[in-house]
Image (cartoon, each protein chain N blue to C red):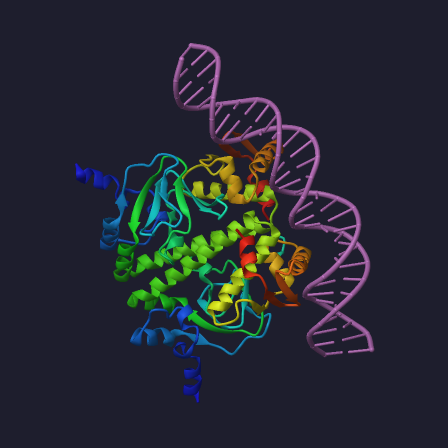
Length: 235
Length: 235
DNA sequence: CGTCCAATTGAAATCGCTCAACTCGGGTGG
DNA sequence: CCACCCGAGTTGAGCGATTTCAATTGGACG
């Protein structure tokens, strides 16, 4: 029985292998990595994975569902710093200090794989391609933060929102989901907080984009109607 | 003669050892790292280190001087993505793809250490603490981008400018320079571009902060007069 | 069926931008 | 050595995008 359960959750059987840490691992190395990965039953919506300032022990790979990371300013306001989809890794920003600078919370029912960092370090001393892969993932993350920064810093509210949708679109599509129709797991205020916009602005922009027939909005269901025009909006 | 030159530029003699990749390396490992580091004569102001879209071959550590990284939007506008001081590493965002997503240019006369990435990868397979250190540096960078993002996304223009000064202040101070008096190597428009503000706004804010006697501005010389009040402004 | 939170809508206020003119300082060439 | 020039920086006025405040609607769930 426990065998069944283990099999079921092995990286081996995970459709996200090609997006996650195991990329490029084979045979024994693959098995070794698998052996340190911890699993848990799916978490419900709104569950904390770790809090800001928590001690850092593990990275987490999203297996299914989605997660937001956030930071709390000294006045208590919460700022969303990122949205994470299956195959993506959270906690990388804590490696440097051993303390989580951001918290993480599930946006919907979510399954995680836990990667104890000390064991991951031990393993990457033996299997160099693991640290290679980790570095690649971090670098990727760094790059997308830069993109985001540029966007938030100097694009219109409309362009920012469109850019978020296009980012989600391409990420969904790489995971085998539709690039043009998806359901947002985050609230309007999460979106606003992430993009540096007021909730009301998000709402008005959605309406306007719909009126221009660029997208179709139904509560949290989004349909991108004019990909080319949308892409042209984010320069 | 060549020995003298080599000694002069060895990590061994570098005051930035404790801020740079060598952190935690000793004896033979230290020597091995040193052996792959390339040096060049100081670059003048305004020199490109690499262009956006250039193929990635090396990381660069700033030895002295300063550097800005930037991105070019499809309409040709240049966006500053970061300022880098001695002991900091540039090029990390290119590891994932092998292509530099951002360009890098000197802001003043600047000396660099070149770290060929393929050799660094080979080395970190032998010396695990190198990849550990690299991961730590990347994570650090990730964290500071998050901070920046939060700031740019949701703070007032004034708070953003103050936050930049405080960041420079603490970075200068860790390098043994004054935490309250420094000379900006970047132009007002670099600052504006980095913070997502118009040049004129930067100028007006500097004036206002000076009138409030929080800082003192003389061209590019900045003196922070009221650290506590300044810190309180960035929540 | 009522409650509560998320989302929407409207109106007024504001922060930062754009456009335009002007100043200042440093470097260059006569 | 001085006058000129050019880019960087400053200053002013008006405008516009986004925020804020306030009220309302709508859905999900008990």
